[in-house]
Image (cartoon, rainbow, N blue to C red; front, side):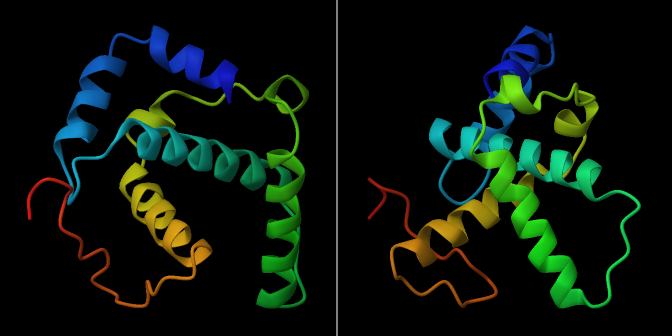
Length: 128
């Protein structure tokens, strides 16, 4: 997402947006978490554009095709999939969902339990 990130960083709202994200949440979002959430938000937008207008025979088929769309975008350099996403999608969108989802998926990928719906319940490093 190097091209999208460059556009975001050139926007005058970027610094206050990132600082606000860093200051909120259960762990004071770290830069890698914010970057991962921005990446996932970018993938979500692109997959949504790819899937626009498609009809599905079942929710299962829809999830399967959405997963394939994500995987195809994920594996390519952004130069190959570039789409100029409106910056308001990031600054005014629901990035909080992406932050929480990224934490959940990270735990799951490590084989940890993230089943709690009030997730995450973690003590920030250094606050024990």
